Image 1: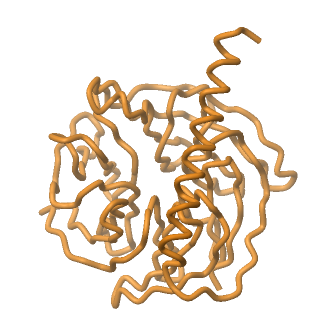
Image 2: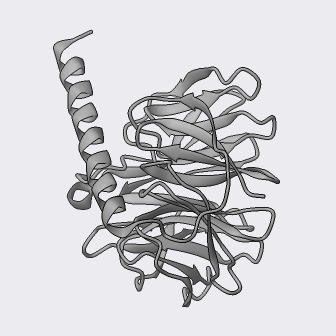
Length: 287
């Protein structure tokens, strides 16, 4: 192992511990986002110093972004690396192809070197779909095959974006949500976007970009999913997984203690996959 690699790992570990420390302090100040009910998260794997997002394959295997792209076996929970990626973020699945954000780094607030890429899981072929992007994070798939994504903290380019259906171009559809982070697409074709700083979930029309409020007061919301039971499940860095009724905005904390939770994504009809800053990947019951 080279000195530079050791130093890089040390810096990443120090950064991870610092983030967890800040989040822990924030939790002590704010407390839980909503009254908790009994739930038993089941840790199935640890993928390294940071797990950012996940997507579940039809066979139950899970692809996780963090230290590159890693695959968790459905039966054994063994972890294998499927691609070396610098700063991977949001993931979506379309057929046998995983689309993912890459270059999710604060440096890209200025440099705009982030990309959206594809990985064909059947052949291993990887391709850059869009390049020259700012600090992007959340990623979703619309019914017509176009992608939606967020630019989170760029002072001039922050917002919600949509690609063309052939993925060759993109344009910004909404600029009203501060620090838009994770997103999910509902069965109604609407986009649901979490704002980390504001602590809100906002519904965005994919055609007009019009925004309407869903709920608020979710401290440090990161990424979310629209689950088969008709509810949104949001991960907060404070360690809570919050169920939100998209019709009424009513909130219920379904799990807690997952400090540094970075995403909640659908696993099956009754569970979501939760990733965390320390690299843990857990299944959380939704009912």
